[in-house]
Length: 432
Ligand code: GLY
Image (cartoon, rainbow, N blue to C red):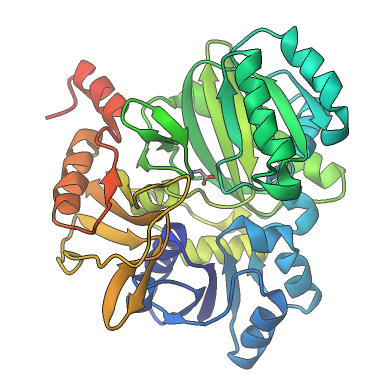
């Protein structure tokens, strides 16, 4: 079987790694990165260059295309490929609006009574009305740019003054271009976050082990919002009752409601959840696997990822037999100096060569330059540690040990990935 993975970050590296576990698979990746090059043949095409990707799929007799990031979904890669009879994993453009428009997603949730925070939405033309609303509002509040912003379009604001500063960035400086010309203003939800991936064909679904991301740049959840600085799975904060609620009040409703509205969702429905004292509520949807959660979650899968992705693309998820192992896995992201505001690049990375059964290095922003592997992105690598004994603390130790052997100028990472889960393990006496 010949598979094309579209994208070039850590999530795509983890997808390539897991797909390659099947016998007899030849994997291509467009555009990939320096780490993916060791496991797949790289194709020099951008992930949203739909027409050239389609030509590559035709010329290279690709059996299945797997879309990693959101941009190609937003421009309709799945619609184009399916209209030409190609098998592709991911949702069509209309279904991907659950991620590509925060306003659309919130209105959809309201229509279908899917639990989420109360909200209002405003356009750039309604600035005066929005300012009046912000002056009379209770804080903290959450401000979200409507469109795609690489995970950086969300701010928690503590006062009207903070909120006005944020609006200046969105409406005047236009840091996210058109994506920030509409905003959602949402009540702040307190609780523990969880990321739940449902792989669906538009009718049936399977749920992968729940994970937790760490969105802030600094230890103790301080600093700016990022695309994600580390993740662990499974998260012990999602127990059976939380998962039952997420399935019935979120996943199953999205599957039936998107079908009822004429844009059935197939692919990976990423449910970003807040576990509140009122039960699980949706923070956001994404229309794809999460990054870096995927780098942890896929280590817990014993059945074939390729068969699951193909079952979703072929609308046969009902006959897929999901098998999980009882490991715990932690992925720590190492970033470049300046991330998430700007980032350095071109720094040589050393220490990547070590081989290990319990850790893996997934490349996010790397490239080959003059025979060396150098940094080329804000998030550079993700080191995943896995403990077959199922302890998050142990998995984190494995990942941090491996990470300490890797170096580049300006490298930084958080030191507390998985800590909340290992504290809980310690309380329950599971950590040793
Ligand atoms: N980890 C957050 C995301 O993938 O959007």
